[in-house]
Length: 166
Image (tube, rainbow, N blue to C red; front, side, top):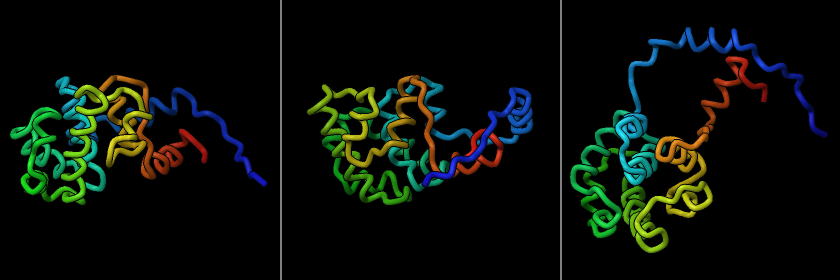
């Protein structure tokens, strides 16, 4: 049996109040947002997003800068030495697996997508190391699509703010 919570959508005033309270409290912009703001290629957004999983934003940013200073395209990265990629992205969490996946993703993009990052969640999640959260972020920031990345933190905070009741 399913127990359904009674839930009333928060008012616009409540939402505005929450956002007003948050203004100015965020001082760090994640690398994915920086890349999107400067209109970086979807490939860079994809690779940086994949690297960001289970890694602090500051670490991801430095790793992405090192990686993209050496390699720019799927063709470049498909031919890269995995050990060199490991050194460039360290200390990203699971850097050895992610380095292998960077090469695999690059090869898959060249083989299956003519070197372009696919623009659907279904196609993105076919790539090695790309799950729903990564795909949603790439769709939102790489292609400007209306997608929301939901993880346990978004879920918990949305409930706490009264935006949802789940």
